[in-house]
Length: 299
Length: 310
Image (cartoon, rainbow over all chains, first blue to last red):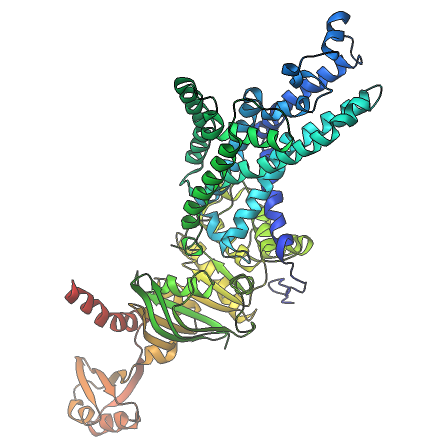
């Protein structure tokens, strides 16, 4: 040890693979919680699920709220069109994450603050030059960032439906109805996890392409809201309701989750939805490859 | 030998940035000099494994042949020229995070972050966001980040950029300590020749992708002919004929002369010439070339060729 400099040579085993990338994912996962506004935003994103939890408490009679007759009507003999408010159906637990309102809005708020900014923000501070000259590859870096974004987003889109489902199981007098939903629910949960991974991957790729964090946020918002709006208008104008699942990024994801969970769907093109997501991911990946070359780190 | 490049050629498409470069970076500090576009950054990129040379070999003493780019980057430390930091991060978070990405377990990365921040003099400010640092503090934070994983080789790209005189001196002292006291190999890329003279033992001057001059600073600045300044008393006698018999000589007036002697010519002749002219030598000092002169003479042919081409 050099006494003057208090410098000790390093003597430790180096970690490799995912262990090396994990700190990057953890940093990305907690980035929202570094400011009070970020913490507030995260809890706002939990509101729809908390609302569903209150519905469950009312429906199962834990909280005495509203006329008894109405409560009984809500819990019994609901038509299939109202599956999304019937705790005895798997759709009840997914609807918060998959609906346009509030699901898409809260998803957009959360991801635009985290996933869409993750790489563009590092580029703005020349952080890429620091990251890429470490013992990780540029795509390892993207993977770490994406993993953190997925875990944070999944805490809202995947974890909350699971919590709701477990709460319903706990509150129900008997488990018959809920065990009947288990198969569909877990397939749907898998679908939600898959879609969260794909949606955040697309967000991270946009972040990799964009030259600034604000531009990345705008592009991301345009992709989600813009494609939904265009798909809605075109499908109405052309009288082709299936077009929505082929043109709207959000609707395509929703169709895929419902398809995986074998939930009934009308006027959708399942193949078109898969095709749309695959094409979008491929195009963005090809564009991002140009910006994620190691040589870009140093200028 | 710490790092060796042999016949390395780097191409970007049709453009050849570095051609047939062979250089060895020894333990100690080496100045990497060259004008913009000379190929310095390309050499750094290839040494960091970010660019694969079109031909040639690179060898790191402590690494096996065929080591992956990530392995190479774990072994070397790099301090970028541009202002760079991680968004929202404090110096401690930035340095420890970069340590973990170099493969250090969390506990070691934290310990090392504290140590290197103390080493560069940022221990008091380590929990402040780097975005709020002064230019000098940011440079130190980048140096700490380059050191956190205890690399054997350090690439410092313009480390004194944007520093005030006191900050510059501090940074140069630190770099000198790293190479002399801690035994690191430092490759010091800069435009500021005085920094190289202050810190480095040797220098590599690059011009248009090739090496224009290379060697120990003493050798580079010594030149082929030795230039002396001579002062004699009394100043009345004429020494020129006697001095010109030894080499080239020129009178500077009032008993002062400039004398150029060939490499193998001893200085005894100067004393004898003075004695023969009835004068006594009061001083005889060897003049060295400045590094700036070395640099300019090395890059001038390239610059002229570029002008002619234009």
